Length: 73
Image (cartoon, rainbow, N blue to C red; front, side, top):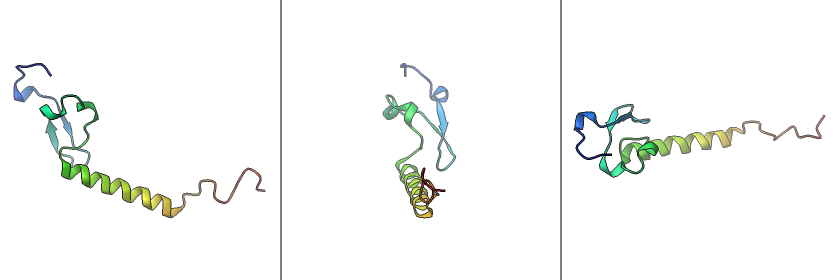
């Protein structure tokens, strides 16, 4: 980010967790493209939700190759 940028001209994104807009911060200078959430709180909440979804998919079975294999009738 070049020096001399006014605050109103900073890039912004929408947080994937809380759906609120947030603007670029100096801390995110090198990783702005990878930033998805506005805060550590939203990051932790998103991680909880993703882990819960993954656990429910594993518990549900999903039917991926469990019953029918290549040699089944």
